[in-house]
Length: 134
Image (cartoon, rainbow, N blue to C red; front, side):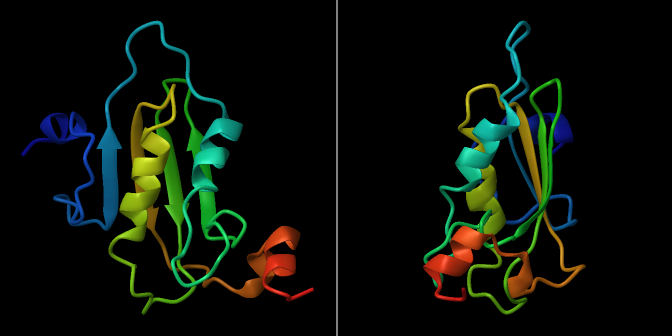
């Protein structure tokens, strides 16, 4: 399967055919369609939750990089709270699917990274309050 063929799929592909640990989905924006705002993408990220922690992945500090291009393409680097997380193979797909559904988003690329390791200091104040971590 070529990258062009894969790029037309909007459904989650749990294993990247590229062997690089990256999930890709979406379709290029039609000509004349403006890109989504970063805030709209952040709102979508806030809808994704770690099933074991009642806080969204953005406030948990799991998003390390977010780039929204002028063409509507979005690149995300994210991590998990632990490498042995039971949803490690699924979470990047959930993120890609949530972001791909935002009007003005074209192609979405989500890469799982482990450096630097996640720590609770990355959480937002809201997340700390929800988890009683002051």
